[in-house]
Structures are given as C-alpha cells and as structure tokens.
Image (cartoon, rainbow, N blue to C red):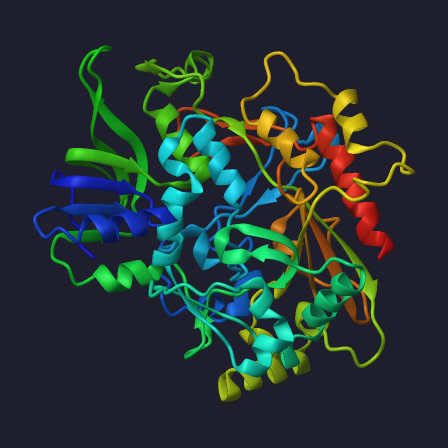
Length: 504
C-alpha cells in the first residue's frame, strides 16, 4: 500500500475499499496497462479475530471499524415517527473489506423476480439471466458430508449444482452443532412449508439451510478482502487506507462537467489525486450520495441549505432509500438446549469453552454463521377467506398513490403472488435485545436463562426515505431517514407475518 499518492494520476480512482470497491479494483487491474487506486477511509484489519472468527461480528457493532450511523426523522428531532420516536442504529464497515467484514457471514442468493423487475423498469442488463453467471463467479460453494446433505435436505433446496470457483468460500455448518436451525427446518416442514424451488436459480419458497461465507478449511470468515489478496501483488494496483475522501473534483461547464479526481484527507493533510478515465464511487448506501452532494451534485435545496454551489441538478441523489425492518421475538427454552446466551452475557466460563473449542477443533458456536436456516414465505392466509381481510382487500384499501414510485407496481405483484416471498423468517440460539436503539447492544443478553429468538424480516418495503448531507463539512455524518413503516402496507404485511410467527 502506497502512502504517497498526492498529485499522482491514475486511470481509475475507486472510492471505498468495501465489497463493491475491491471487486471492481480486482477486475480492472487484471489489465496490466491500467492503473487503479482504491481509497478506503478505514484501516486494514486482516488478522483481527473479531473479523476472522465467524461469530465474532457482535463485537464489531459500534466498534472502531463501524461508521455507527443512526437514522433520524428530521434534521433536529433524531426520531423515526412511525416507530414512536425511536432512533435505529445502522452499522456499516469502516475497514478494508467494508461491511462484508462485519456481517453475520450469511450467504443469501437473491430473488430472480427482483432482478427481472429491475430489467422491466429499464435496467435491461440487470435481469436474472444476465446476472446469474456473476453469482456463480464470485463464490466457491463447498458442500458438506453426505450425512449433512441429507440432514439439511440440500438435495431438495440445491438440486442443480453449478460449477463455482470464486474467491468467496461458502459452506454449511454441521447439523449436529446447529440444533436450533435444525428445529426451525423441521418446524416449517411440519407446518406444511416444505421447500419449493432452487436456491441457486433465484427461486426459493419455504425453509432451507443456507450456506455461510466461511472457509471450511480454516473455519474463518471469507469476505471481499479475498479480492484484494488475489490482486495485491499487481504493480498497477494501489490501495490506500485511512484515506477519507472529501469530495469529487468536477471540471468543465454546465454542459460538459467531468469528474477528474478526488480530494481526500490522509495523515493530517488534504491531498488531491486525479483520474484519466473514471472516478468510481463505491462508498456505500450513505456515503456515496453524501460525496455527490458535497461535490455539488444533487437536489438544489439540499445543496443550497449547506451553501454548496449546484453543479449538476439531480433530484434523485439520496432519495428512494429502502431498508428492511427486522424484528425478533425471544422465547425461553428448556434446560439443556444449547444456546449462546452465556457468550452474549460475556460469562468467562462460556467464553473460554467456546474459544477452546474453536481454536482446538475449529468447531462450536464461534465457527458458525449468524443464521443457518431461513424461510421465505408469501403473505400468510392468502387463500383464507376467514381472516380479517384478504390480500386483495388490503391492496384495494391502499391503492397506488399519485405519483407512485415505479417499484410499487412490482411490490404489489409480489403480495398477490402465492409463491413469491414478502418476508424472511430465521432464528438464532440466544436472547435478542430488540428494545435497544444502538446496534452495539442488539446482541447483548440482559436476562438470565437460555433463549431462542425467532426473527422476521420485511423483504419488500413500500416505505421510502432519504439520506442527505447535514452540512458542507465532510467529517459530519449524513442525515438518514428511512421513514420506516410510513407506508401503511408495510405495517399490514409485517403484522400478518408477525402473527404467524408467534402462532407457530
């Protein structure tokens, strides 16, 4: 890593050394005649056990590698109106590898219907057929023993095995070490929710055992840093960490504006680096629009409020933010059922046992991904005329708005579909602290005893929010307003799924 790039010129400058940034850097630098620079605000933590140990991620929430964003309702109130004034923590990785360094190591294939909908809305090259080869290219799927294939029912959920040899290693845990996930799989089967589809084909309905981004040889996290490691010896690639980009340099007139470089802060100095071809923003959901606005690209009222000259008027920057709400319900389990509550309570004995099992046998609770089984389900009671209102009735009650966001037509078709999922169910063997506002406290057990937590995630929220700069100071965090549950359909659908979760 070169610490002196001030005043240099590269073909490509990539802002953000996270999941997207490192992939793009690796691919572009395959051409030896092309020079690539990656600027990452965080540090390098390649051997940090909080990252490498698969279950170490709770220790990263609110830590030195977390941007620790928070949602705010307005510039002054710092609340989410529909959540009764709560402020929601939004962790994001500030480290080489980005947020892929601090997730729960869960690998989830996307929905075919989602990508095809993007194509229908105008992004023709983003349909499933076009994207599917790249889903194979990034990963290397390592199937377990035949015993675990049978225990997890992988012959049903992954019937078509496709060759994959990408840098991201993926594997399954042993069913014998994952009792709670096995129980969830059996529960959905008993309820008539047997899996239908093919996960690798983007069609999944029902419960299945999902792989985790864990290398089965080392039992360590596999994440986007793998792209850096396979390309780091290339002389045409430079990656600079602890380099905080402040704005994109834009030159020309209103008709011919061109991004020619970036200004960044590194080693207590403001520096400039220029690009011959492109500046690529890969700074994440919140930081990329922030950088555009700091550079004079965005809504005129937002820029003028912060006294930033408008170079390119674009009302879409920072808008149409969609985030998935997640809620959990914790239940106490019978004595003897294995959970991680001792770890969440930071009990010395539990921590020592787990660490010994991981270091000596590469096994146990620390070797597992955050989720081992998930279930994708449509709106419950869709065919039941006896419930309070059918899906058709709900959609009639809340007709499309004027104007209506373009994705809402697709979202309504999902609700009407008897197979396409509108929520994801999962579980983990421990107590959930769902009343907290700080992500750091989410995985802290506050009660004695052992628990299992059932989770519910809204897959296709209708509510849309925004993220914008809070001032012209690049060091200031953006204002993030997801407007959770601001659309009544989200509350209706969420409530139906939650009732179903509580009943089973």
